Length: 89
Image (cartoon, rainbow, N blue to C red; front, side):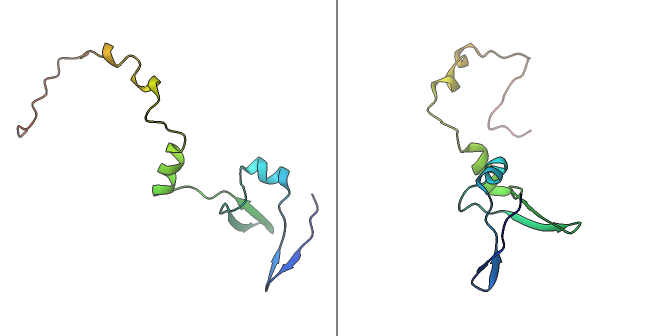
């Protein structure tokens, strides 16, 4: 795909065609990582770390989803564990 380099302030800019942005899963306002590898400009989504990773993992979590409680009443102890709360080990 051939695109044109344009002036943007003191920088050069390219537009990422919608089809390429969608295939990467990036949207307006997202941060991307740019590197040069073997004379090629590589644009990719950054690796999420720390709070950003946790936020991404939990973005669709619904604590009020009734499916989370399904089967909870059927939980039984499997082994012979004995829990002694408040006692030093």
